[in-house]
View (cartoon, rainbow, N blue to C red):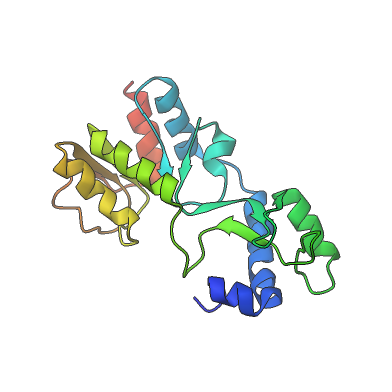
Length: 200
């Protein structure tokens, strides 16, 4: 909260980017796992209409998901809030490495902000509206790898259930939906989703 907050970015961009820059480096080298690939196969087989994610790591895109709805944004780009300039992650990483204080700067001189939703910021309205529409029309919502504690996203299963759809959980640990879900698979997410995929 102290560092990954929009006010922290405004107040001390060097401290913010020192924190975020390290995470960028770690996340850019990550590769999709079997769970990401299973979702892609379910989508390609016509069994999955959409992937709505809170993850910012680009892994759904890297795996081949057609159009992931990234409710918390993505590290794929960073933007200048002053002039609108946008830079891809490899350019931002190069800027961080060559900047004396580690702050990637726009050509206009202002610090760039990663295109992720920081604490103190609202979710992107268009993406969340789309997620709500999908939730309302879903026959089945599968909640994967989430504790369902972060709102407003945690309210999406209720949207599905209220519209007559069912909710399934694929996650370790307790959630507020454990007693209401149609099914809960509590093993390793990769193994569980690969087993589901094998049934098709």
